[in-house]
Length: 444
Image 1 (cartoon, rainbow, N blue to C red):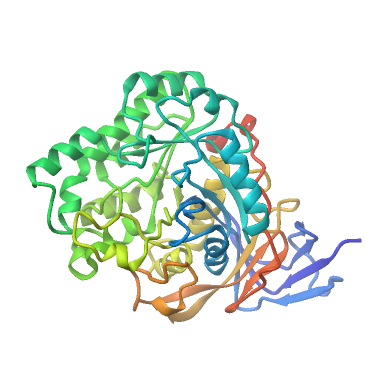
Image 2: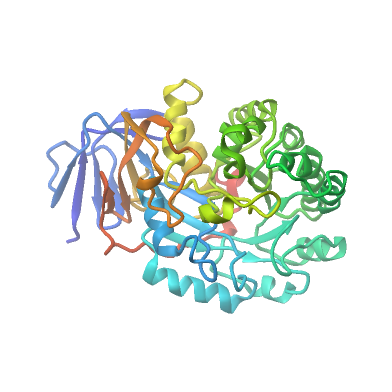
């Protein structure tokens, strides 16, 4: 008989209700959701006063491994994830070398099996000439296209190439959407830009909207499942309001909680792609989440070293770390009355798992994987750079005090993180995908 854990006295956050329940975990699965409080168990976790959420599914991270491991790697990134209540990550392909062949994809999976402390999956990246690799790939959530700036040969801006990818592949597609010609024209008008805030003028709302419209048009015409990454504008939200069943989209904490005024305090630490937009755009993103035009919240965790980030613009790179603070940032919004715990369970766990066809993930359901996070909604704590687990050791929210924090993270039924302590002997598992299920809309 397997090891049994009883999580006793907590309040379970389901995708549609919040109720007190005792949860029994048998090995790596949820065995019972409404067990007696004196159920037999090898280990009892007292959860009185705490809320039990499904583990956070962060379907958009950049762990920089291989090739850029001075910023982050699978080991440090997954520990930061566990600290933040994230139990499953999907990593992007723009590494060095990029993940643009099946062999490189499977090499990353093999490496993660020995280094990743949460569950993992890896996208395969599109280029102008790797269609056969995209057609052959499996063990992946889908294809990532950069319709906008990227590294190496991963910028795919040619219409014929895009048509072929949408027409002749089967995997779900996601894309970074910023129209390259608009970005270049804006940069020319600003002579390349000299201030950090110029970044938002160069990568403006039109750049995002034009590329998003182009990608969703491709998806509609080819009836191909498509996911819009890091939505940042009101115009994109309006475009997504009239969604198809096979088009989904996400928002990131920095686009929900920051706007162009953030450059005044943060400078390059607020520099991201797509760039920060106006406060009106922030409000539009929140509204789109609540109305269903956007389905998920993910981080786009993209660390750089502080030395890199403090270079003058435009030498400063875009991207910021957020995986270990994202859930706390959103729990703080729950305490502010801007959303509910059930909203977070839907946006940060259930929806990303269903968008990417993850088997047994994203909900507290008997038979599902025991990927869970206990949160203390009353805990108040200040984000400090020196406490960050991410290898880059900084956060744009340094000095901010938040109320509501993850305290214990279970991966496959094992406690990986508990109140500041890690069990680094625990490794996550490769995520199984079932793309025949049909994705978010088909499994609602």
